[in-house]
Image 1 (tube, rainbow, N blue to C red):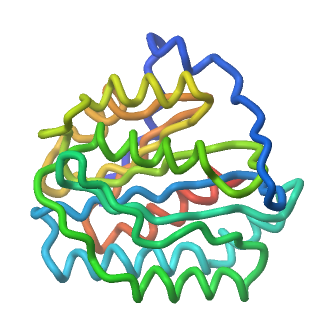
Image 2 (image 1 turned 135 degrees about the horizontal axis):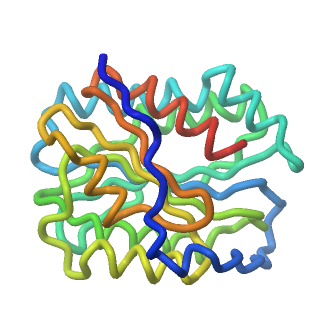
Image 3 (image 1 turned 60 degrees about the horizontal axis):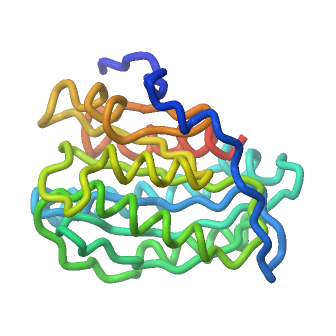
Length: 227
């Protein structure tokens, strides 16, 4: 399977150099607040959708991910799941979960498997970034870092606000955006995501060769983001 090196954020994204604003929240602290923003557009078949959901559940309970979580300064992260596709229609399908150990990760994995699929249509990545950034602005924990983890199999198509503009606004607010490009149907998608989607300190793109490779790629991506 072809795996290319990580792609980093382009140097022209000057807002990526800004430090994250500290958050004051009533809830307990976490090392990172992470939005999993996954593609649920019409190009995703029911079988592919199930592979994607199972991949998310498998990743958050994997020993390598749990080791990254417990090895942090706080030893906790917060995760929520957003599905995107329709212009202006990104939807939070699993609310914030604070993960500190295998038991809390298992509860999150169950929620990821059981949540119904949202109604989506054309790819609208810019609107997905706006929705995820708004969630991070209201995260109910004191987060050291705020990250959007966006995965998809196609570029932005129908956003009300184009992905680069949404990306720049989120980065200016102290959010880092990383991406997972599923390249089976769109060769070169990693380069598009590097140019149009990612931003913030240490931002990167990883590549999955197809839906069956999603769990492996997401697991490696989570370890890197959490650590």
